[in-house]
Image 1 (cartoon, rainbow, N blue to C red):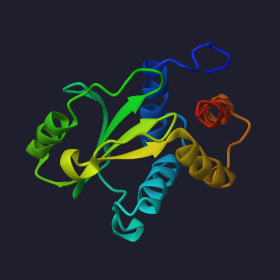
Image 2: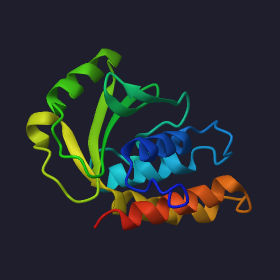
Image 3: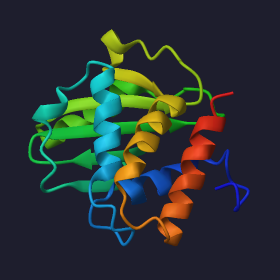
Image 4: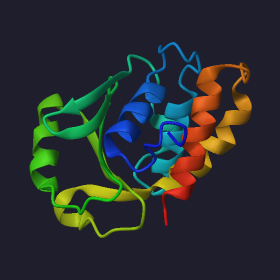
Length: 166
């Protein structure tokens, strides 16, 4: 992202995150980045990390205005990404849109700084870029193919996630 001079672009960030969350993508990191995300969500008390099944994963970019949606057999995870824009989205409406999947829901706003999402009313928690970057960084040691462009791009992405929380 730094190389592309798009480190503050929500669309680029969402596209990169969705790419790395897909276990079968050409990066060949399997579900490692998804595991980092689930660990981040578990640290917020939103899921029991051991209960998440990594089979039949479907990552959707832009589902009914929701930036990223992740589906498996049991859960739907809705991610609204915010870098510099204000949180103007109707999170209750977004939560209602995800009910069509008839699965356990985990929704959160991914943001630079901690923001009040009014979780009890909206069903959306808040996760900061720094929190996610910390878990991705920890799991990167398990990536075997470190001499690939995908690893380099991921490393750059994590640096930008860390630096974007200012």
